Image (cartoon, rainbow, N blue to C red; front, side):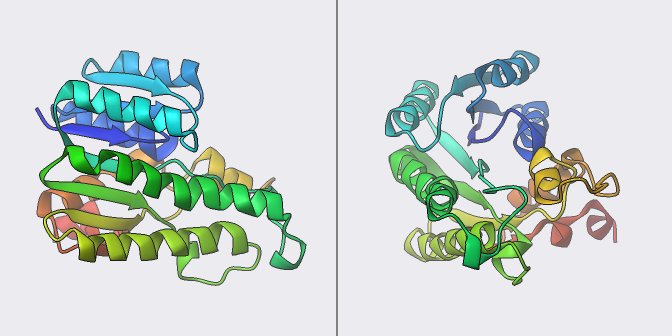
Length: 229
């Protein structure tokens, strides 16, 4: 049975991907800060283990690695947990530096730290997926904190891919989604026209099945519509 470790799995894309993998027979180690919400997800998935905590905490990352060791292997690491920063999002000229440090700690340092923690556990041809954003490559006004952090994560992903030729290492831009984080980025706006995270999962699963070379990919490139052509 393949094993996946997913961070930020109590809601949004992390929860949707956990459900999609569980339906395909994967064993799961799930992370999120909110213990109650994470346990709710894990109870729905008979092959899931919930390990709640803050991904920036080294002791929590070790607990996640220990849960993976108990399962004997790791076939997929998904660094999905992210921090948007202040909402409404400030311009860079007014960005609180303590908040910027927190964005980088959650969105850049923690994914790398967790990856380092579990590298010895990766199975042959295992995949690492770092969830990115179009804000990593497009200079949207007000997105300087989150966007620059995701750009840094993209570059770390590219270098890790060059350093780990035996693994598939991806930065994946899922596109806009109807999530709490996306709503926080656009406070007061109607985002009901954005797709739900569950609509993105088939594209991610197709990416993992096809295993293109390590690199940066958009979920829209692997959409169900595209697959049907």
